Length: 476
Image 1 (cartoon, rainbow, N blue to C red):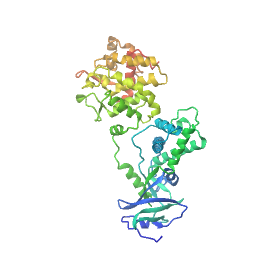
Image 2: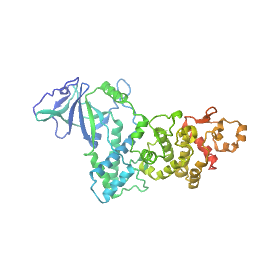
Image 3: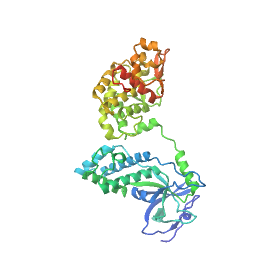
């Protein structure tokens, strides 16, 4: 091929970063030429498996003992991304074989139900640096790609020394590694990894993989080697200072999405789907677009963040829904819906100015009831009799602001005896330790407003409800 000069303007002219030609044994990469704020870069796609094999994380490079370029790897975050990628591979193979019938088609759909569905899946581009492309030392081997004498990109040859050093995307790369290792372990051993380390919640004590499922996983493995690709923005020949600056800019100049918007837009989480399909659309709960509900202008709705938190305690016994999977959530939704049907029967709940009419409209008290529901339905020692006693008895409790039991910690010993609350002491935690400031009763407005430290307060409110309904004492 005749050597050509490609006219690229900018601070890093491409013809200073590459040399022509390559070995046929090297890996070929077709890339578009881009000019990123004056610097020549390449935009390319590469199969997941090849990307993992040809890349590494730019984490060892430091200058004069200064901190390395990357942050510390968060293995849990990488595992969550790996499950997301696995979900995408399953969705891809289901879509590619949608006209198939038979046992493998059934297995594809069965696995998809376990990992979960969502409207759309995509992995954002990864930013990497090719250190071997530079004016100092060796240069990248490449030739121009032309159509009708017009240059449209480059054909790049990557050898063993041409490593794609990941500047932004180390968790995505680790996630891809986890997926590949998971699929290779299944391929070689025909067994699922132990439950705690498995990306797929197979739910079996026997780890052997059924033959129809094994075929599905092999389809996913083949997708990583061809059909499913990673998009790359490749910077050329950055030095230590430039590489670290790029990492800083990519991770600090973006604005994080607000929590309420993220929760509203996420349809992949099964608890979010339950909130949308079974609560909001049926009228069992109203969600405000605001991040905070004003008591003076209360329409009976909850913020998205609050209603998600209540359902997290109700279904998962956690403060967030990040760990929700269809396999865990599916069998618990019947109890969850029953919970919301019950609380909707509390006088004043969901109405205009609900917070001034009933303390049950405050999220922290709903968390207390939700936690009790979880304990009796799905906890370590489930008790159907106690569950029914709780959900049948909730509507008999006086959730008005006037109920003196909510003010237990504000009362004197004489007032406690006067209102026959002395036996409540046995249900409450030791008063000598921990936070017992659960809220304050305002005599002018007549409102009992619970505090903002929900994790400290809702267990105590749960104890009060246990006492009122004569349920088991968690301290005994």
